[in-house]
Every structure is written in C-alpha cells, then in structure tokens.
Amino acid sequence: MNGCYNTRSSGGVMMLRKVLVILLCISSQLSIAEEVENLYVSLVAVADQSAESKQGGISEALKNVLVKLTGNGEILQLSRLSPSFDNASTYIDALSFQDLPAASNRASQDLIDTPIGLRVSFSRSAIDELIRNNQLPVLPSNRPKLLVWVVIDDSATGREFLGQDSSSLADNNIGADIITELSEVMTERGIPYMLPTFDLEDQLALPIESAWNLQADKIQSASQRYSADGWVALRFYRTSSGDVRGAWVYQVAGRRQLGDFNAERDQPLITSAVNNILNSLTGSFSYIPRGDINSLLVEITGINTYSDYQRVNEQFKKLEIVSSFDLFSTRESQITLSVSAEGGAALLHKALVRSGYFRSRSVNLPNESEYLVFDWTAK
Image (cartoon, rainbow, N blue to C red; front, side, top):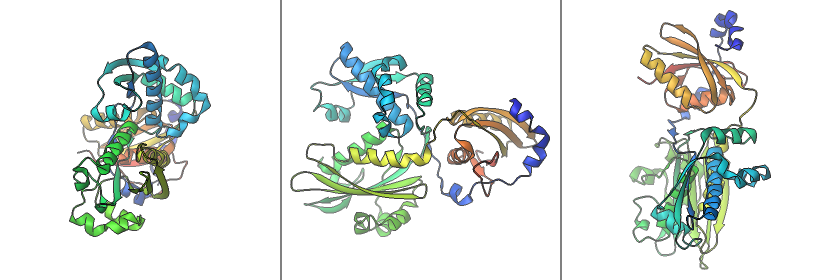
C-alpha cells in the first residue's frame, strides 16, 4: 500500500461518508464500449522486400499506430515527432511480410504496382514512453462505439440510405465504395462502429429527407434504439464532373458538430472526411498523460466471492489511465481500492461505467473528487 494512502487511513470513516457522485444522467447514457485489440500493430503496403521499402513501411506503420492510439491524426504534423519517424525501427517488437487484404490491395494499386503487406508490431512499453514523453493524447482501448448513418443522392436512383444490405451495393457502384472506405478507415483508426438496419422502425423515425437535411434532433431520436456511444450522419452526392460533395453532423458525449467535405475525381470518396470527424470527436474520450498522477479511492460493493475480486482486478488492469492500484480495505461484500489514475476522477468514472461492469452510486462529482462509489454488476 502506498504511503499516501496510509496518511488518509485515520480519516477513512469520514471519507466513506462523503457523498461524491457523477451525474446520473451522464452514466445512464453511456453504453458498454468495446475493447479494441491490436492497437500496437499496423499492416502497410510496400513495393517489395528491399531494405528501403521496409524502412519506409516501418515509418508509415508507426504513424498509423500513433494515430490509432491517440485518436488524432493531426499529431503527425508535430515537428518534434519527426526524429521518431526517422528512427521507427527502434520501436519494433516484430515484423513480417504477408499478403494484403483485397480491399487494401485495391487502395494501394495506384501508388504501388504490385504491393505486398508489411505487418509491424511495436513494443507497447516503447510506444507508451514515446507518447508520454511527447505529451500526446491517449484514446483508451475501451473505446466508444459509433452509429453511422450514410445517405447518398444518386442521379439514377435518388436519395438512399447506405448499409451492408443496401440495394445500392448490388452493382459495386459508388455506394459499395463508400461502405468499403468507411470500414477501412474505422478499422485503421481502431474505432468500433455499426450501420443502422434501415427497417420499418428506422424509416418511421428518420425519413430520408430528414437525414439528408441533417436534422440532428430526429437523427438523435432514431439513434436511441441502438447501443452506441454516439452517432455520425454523412450525406453526399457526385457532381457532373465526377467530384464528390458532402456534409456531416455528429453527436458524441452531448456535443454536436457540423461540417462539410469534398473529394475530387479519382480521390478517396470519404476517407478524409471520416478522418477529420474522428480527429474531432475522439477528444471527448481521450486524456493527456500527466506527471502528477491523481490518487483516488474507489469503493465497490457486490464483491461476494474471490472470483468477483479477481474479475475486478482484471478490469482495472485493462484501463490505460490506471497506473497502479492496491486493496485499501474490505468489509463484508465491499472492497475499497486505492487507485493511481492519470486521467483524474471524472475520466476514471466514465471508463468504469462504460466498461459495463460498474454502476455508479454517485450523484455529483467535483473535478477534484478523491472518492468514487460503484456497484459491481458482472453477475
């Protein structure tokens, strides 16, 4: 047990009586997030297996991994990261050559005649140190799941929602390209997502014209049936010159934002737009690693067996924002953990609720709260 917690043990009873909570309306809107794997791995296209191609591929893979871990592609513009990209090999854990998936192969064909895949696995400890030393944001692996509405205005078929089962995908036209691009970007960024089913309930809740006009209130209402942490709506059309014009709106963590985009002929249709959207919305779930780690006490009730206790430990070990934790006290079916968390009480609370295993018993949470109370719900 850390010394800082020992100094508080005499006031433990007083702290146990403190009423410190998180807004119930916030916790009730948070769904069970998805744990994303392979965040330190990237598969990139290279021309051949030469040393030059391999070095360039490793540098590109490092950029992909940093974007995936931080949630923000704009960090690639930081000049202080240039030496790391030039010496990307120092962060490698393992690498291998392999065939590219069909979609990635097509996407790389314009740049490389006969691309092959270079799979690079980076050292977690080395990359984490790189992120900390450069004070980059961190998007935890327990990530928000997004609902994505996509509407196309086609000169032949009119306005239509796009989805995996959409009729617009039957002939491998622009609709299929859009869905493929969306899948590739979300996978590359490590962001879980889903498409609406477009059944009768969706059609009644969100008419096509309302979606096309990006009527956020109606989109929000139609999205509530899905277990998602937020939603994104995109609309677009192709001009007579072959360019794509579009607009988008999203709502995440109570925040809405609007924007527009365009893509010239022969450019990826929505890749840039989706990347820009993700750069913006992931900030609601990210934190900056800090040197002054916050010390918190987390009380958890409903721990009736040693197996429950082990499962609690497993959940805390998964959270990147948790630097360390120890058992502080036990009483009947209740345990209290002392937790060192980089993101602070509010972010730790949000991460625990979003895991789906903890239900908050708080009603208010000051930013400097040092005590959190939860029920263990994994029965």
